[in-house]
Structure formats: C-alpha cells, structure tokens
Amino acid sequence: MVDLQDLEAKLAPLSHSAEAIEVIRTACKSLPNTSERIALWSAKNAIVCEPIQPEYVRELGFDNPEDEFVLLQGDIVRTDSAYFMGERITGHAKYAVLNSSCDLVPNRSSYSLLLKIAEITRGDPQVNAKLGQLVKFSRNDSMYIPALPDDPEDVVGNEVHFDGVCQILHQHLLLANRIASLSLIGWRIFGAFARNVIARANPREVEIRTAVQK
Image 1 (cartoon, rainbow, N blue to C red):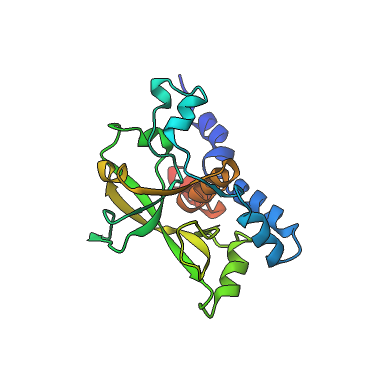
Image 2 (image 1 turned 60 degrees about the horizontal axis):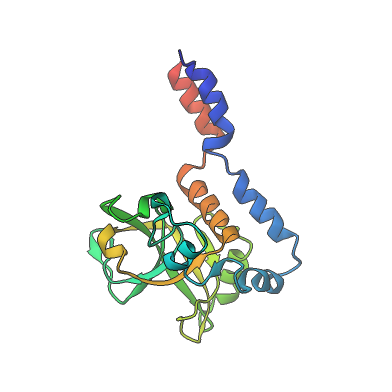
C-alpha cells in the first residue's frame, strides 16, 4: 500500500524546487561586475564546447546500445525544419535541444522540442543591459551562452529563450547542423532553467492545491 500523502511529502523538495537556479545566481553575485561574469561564462568550454561526437564517445568506451546517440540535450543546432505556432521558421535559425538525451536516441521518438536562440549584437542599444542580466542568470525565461564559432563578428552573446518552444520531426532534427554541445556545468545550468520555467512552484500554489483536495 502506497501512502500518497507520504509520497507527496518526499517529492515536495524535489519535483518543483527552484533551489538549483538560486545556487547559480548566488555564485554569479560573488563576482564583482559584468565584465568578470562575461569572462567566466564565455571562457572556452565553460558553458559550451565543441559538438560531442558519437564517434569520439565510442572511443572513450561508451559503445553499449544504451549509449548510442546522435544528439545530446542542450546541443545547439541550425535547421530550417522547425515550426513555431504552426509556422515553419526559415533562415537557418539556431536552437537548443530541449528533450532529454535518452529521448534523442534514433528511432525512440517521433517529435522533438527546440528552444529558440537569439543573438545579441554590438549594435543593439540595449546590449549592455541585456548582457548584464543574462550573465547574472537573473531572468527566468532566458539563459546566457557566449558567441558561437559560426556567429557573425558583431555577435557578442546569445540567449536561449525558454518561453517559446518549437517542434520538429525527430528524423529532421537528426539531420540538423550541430554547432556546439553544452559542457557539464552548462548542461546543469540548462537543466536548472528548464525545471525553473516548466515546473517551478509558487508556495501559494501548494496552499491552493492542498485546500482543493480537503
């Protein structure tokens, strides 16, 4: 017999916690200014790294069927095959892959989810304000990633938008142009944002749901 109240109590600090994102923000506050934060998060292999290739991973010994992959969660890709609000997006736009890596194994899923990535350019009149917010990770809906190898020269950074989810056929995603992968800490931050946006709970919500069930 499962005690549902006991199970809920065990899940309470885990399923909807925003603690991870607060840990990231506290770490950022320990740096004195925006320049140092940009230097930290834009350093090589800090948040992003070169695409993690399946062939290299196999050489490292991850060659079991359960290790098979073409893409990993958070991989940054370019494609013209994604749709947003029912409309196809052209222009070889950039995205971060939202699905868990387990669901990105070939032949496991029919559809995949992508997050739009917007470029921040030197000519943007709000460039300093945007970068200042992003490198503190103070926004709930956007995550900072540095300029990428194939970005135009005037791009000084990018922001992953968690408030606009795009959809793509999985078979088309596997053909997308991979630009970069997330580092381990980059993936941890990405996961913290995903949970913060999708599953973050307001204490008032707990009170509402508890009252409704009484």
